[in-house]
Length: 413
Image 1: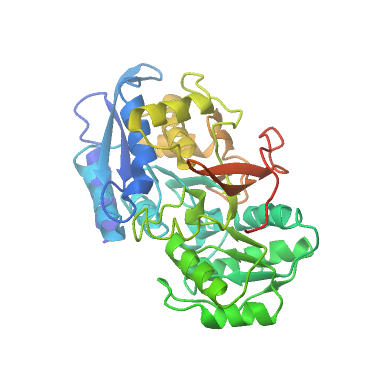
Image 2: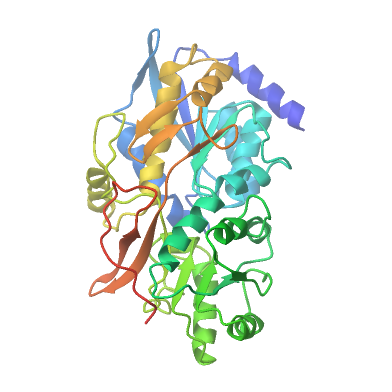
């Protein structure tokens, strides 16, 4: 099947009737991830009317095409096929979904079309598609952070407490949990290098039904901090059951859905949000309106992008907004600097040599930890309750000192 997909792609590359170029986007417009696709949809709607051409050795008309992944890996792969066969996409961009994103990247690799993606740790991106952490993909590129970066940020947060806490792990039994536990490239060894001892009660299956055994284990081992990568619904269940059992961790750190303002794509925005309202969950932060970066397209600031999103949608800014904008920046840059923007292989090579200052920060594919990867730094954040809901405060900034700290770490109430 892979060879037939590639044949279709290469035939399509030779059927271009004009000099126009196309940026294709796979976006979860429907299904459980739909809310998480909003930033990329907004950015494309905002930028497409402004980015109508690419100036390379000559001018090429530029258009954007979007296909719905339906929040499902099978439909995501089909969306890539449609972008290649019907829209003649020269490069594909995507974000969101620990199973959907690898499906998009895998389809692009099989079809021979360049792809740029973002939003989850690079180790997960590689290991969800290959057995070797140093595997070199021909067509697909990713920018994000590593599990070791998350561990460093969380250690920064834990160390803001008065003592050195014993840290308990709440990790699932899927790929995510296995990678967090990985003895070389995972979260656990990076935390150990900072001098932290982790206690792991074992994985759980999502969605979780009962955390009682995990709570007993963490309590028995004196874990005063809990670190997790759970969905909001699962974390809310743990928080509720822990309180009912009289187990009150001083702090919870979570790297998954809690980077968003208490939105759980599995169960809608309501469930989990209210139960975690007083938990002061700490999380990773990769983009805020206060980040001191500008768009490579027009010089607009992070604060201006966030304001445009809030004005245009009536919704609070989301961290993926900056990454979504950077996806378009990278795609446009690659088409502009490719030896031949109508040659997909040339566009892929252009991505691989990209060094670009974006609204999400500097991206450099020439110096990543493995081939096909560019890194962005993380800072530490914590959700603080306010009169109007919740505010994501920056509480540590060791990896990015130019991002201002706006609050101290506050123990769970």
